[in-house]
Length: 85
Image (cartoon, rainbow, N blue to C red; front, side, top):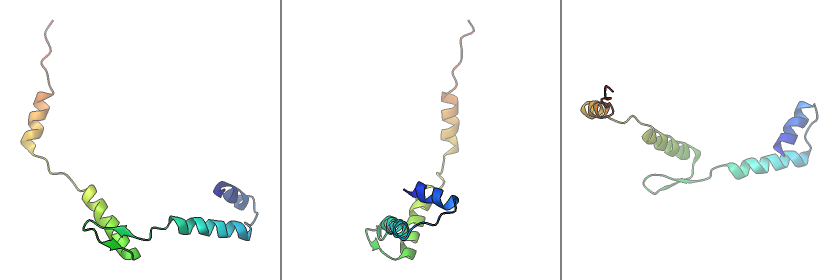
């Protein structure tokens, strides 16, 4: 349905009031109203929801510390000596 609305707008036609109300209804249905943070508290304001997402993504994608000796050991273990034949 959204594709039809987009096509009509490109063709120069204006969407009917019904279609505008349907679009708004779909947008309202997609809005996140509350979220639970890592402590189990429910966050309901938009600032708190954004802060919770930001802290979750920051923890999820933070750099992983790597031991240099372990990386060298793994690199050596991956190399096998090929027979001369």
